[in-house]
Image (cartoon, rainbow, N blue to C red; front, top):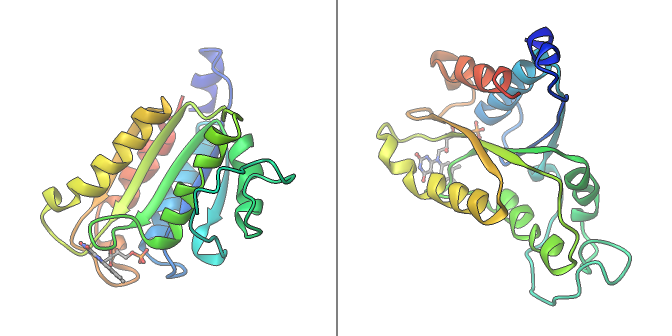
Length: 192
Ligand SMILES: Cc1cc2nc3c(=O)[nH]c(=O)nc-3n(C[C@H](O)[C@H](O)[C@H](O)COP(=O)(O)O)c2cc1C
């Protein structure tokens, strides 16, 4: 894969994977690792940022982003994430579905993407992907989170490079019983 990419003259990308699950080593972490393994095989560099290990408060729309020497004026762990976002060429959201949407830990980080707009500091991210699992069997029940992701991508002018939905899983290791990890790895390998 890496050789193919080099022959095409494509540049290696730096991929930031934002995870949203507070359950360590669970389905989301496994999906994220599988994607990252695929992307590494394709010659890219990857980095994982677990939003649930950080304390990121909600955006308060104070509109003072980047005016106090940091991305967000509220002193929280978004300060750890902002430099990683500035470094990334691609952003991957790896998350459980909570109440048909993003878990609050990941949503707080997404909300603070606003700081780059207000601060007029455009990110160099060009593409994104979504890896999402949930307990429900019916894939149409993922429409809300998928549509939300797609609208974020469209608004940011990021190419949507793919969505992996893994339905019908509840327990920590359930993803191992599905083809989800294979699909996540394949998506990672396909990043060009
Ligand atoms: C607070 C909470 C809300 C959830 N909401 C949904 C939901 O709306 N739809 C669904 O299918 N699964 C829901 N689930 C199940 C998780 O999405 C699912 O178990 C997921 O695979 C967990 O991933 P993890 O192991 O990475 O934490 C919810 C789980 C929790 C804890």
